[in-house]
Image (cartoon, rainbow, N blue to C red; front, side, top):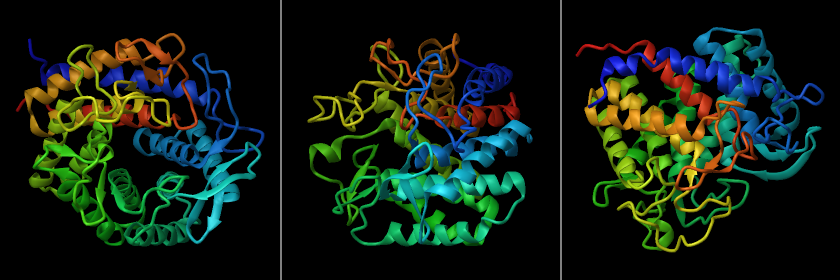
Length: 403
């Protein structure tokens, strides 16, 4: 029996409780570093600290998350306190000058890895924008404007390769940077205004919809040659369904903001491709990496640098897919999208959500058994899971159950 929009609407309070009582309480109880500022992020399943270094990605992401909760659900003293802790640590310890941000600091705030990356810049800027909105404090706005302009210059700079804290091959352009760039522009729009961010949003949106999304191969490529052509190699054929689904909902929200049905339809097409390739018809859920046809990527015969196999089940992939399919179901009233959402709803609650200690496991084996039960890692923080749960809560508030 197919799911219904009424059943979708009925999940509103469930997701609100899951967000606030099972996920955010895990982080609120332990992430704030009252001694040195900022956030402690690595925690095991029970919430015991497993590391104290402060990755700028996570500091920026969690600043955004706590501020976004205030902006979307109403201010709470604890959320504002935690958002300020992140903002202050970033401004006092991580700023490298010229609109750029260091990658890694010690717990005390000393720079430990002085690499610069456009990814760090993006997450910091989103966090600072959301914090300024939550507090009404405009002291950071001049720096935010200058940093936003600098980011856009670097994005368009030929041969620029500081995408992550390690150098990437300058022969390629990367989907992930343009994807996060669109979302950063969406976040900045609320603070800096439409006219300021529109050129950057237009550029990133066009790159996603018309370059990385490829009609011939029915896929969203992760890398392209700088001329926009697919990369004819094993690396070029390795796709990331989670990134494609995350990118698609950014685009779908942008299409909704612009009242542009063509953007919404194109984003829906991206969801079809990514879900179709990533769906695991043996065990359910979504595979981490596939070729465009949904098979094991050529050359992906051992774990990557993050310890992920091609058939690993990853926390962020499933949280992004959860919201992408819910949004598409509401926007398009398509039964297939609604059924996909309910599959992921049941899958994530059965396998990822830890109803004993809170939050979600980081990684599952293909069959759904946990193999990394940590709740926080060097890159898993209070971001992907709560961001998408918050988005679902916001979405379901406005769902109409009749056509």
